[in-house]
Image (tube, rainbow, N blue to C red):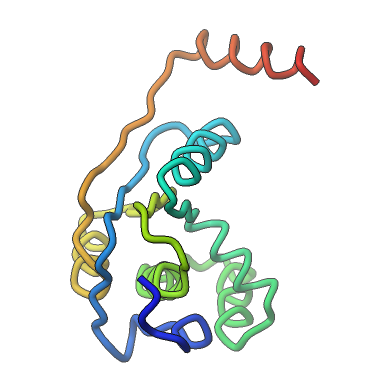
Length: 149
């Protein structure tokens, strides 16, 4: 929760194994704004957080930190950002959070290896939430949203 004051300044995934005492939920399924909206509402209603792996990468790149520059360079070179970097970013974001509810994570994990790394360095997830919908249902939802604009 809010135990480490400096946790947001330096990602800690490499140097230490700080276990976080939060209910972590992996959010799986289709991607898009609707999933982000659903996760944001769940997190807000439960006094928790919603983190997107890609969003954290973009935020770190925008910060122009040493790690952000390294991520930018990797992506420009067509390299995949290592799971250890994403775990660092997730761990820092969770540790810096001021909320006490569940933590929903989108865009992670991508493989069994990343699950193990996250469990070793952050915590074991409590749940995996699979959001599925037919294309027809999604199209109807999108049309409803567009008509409200």
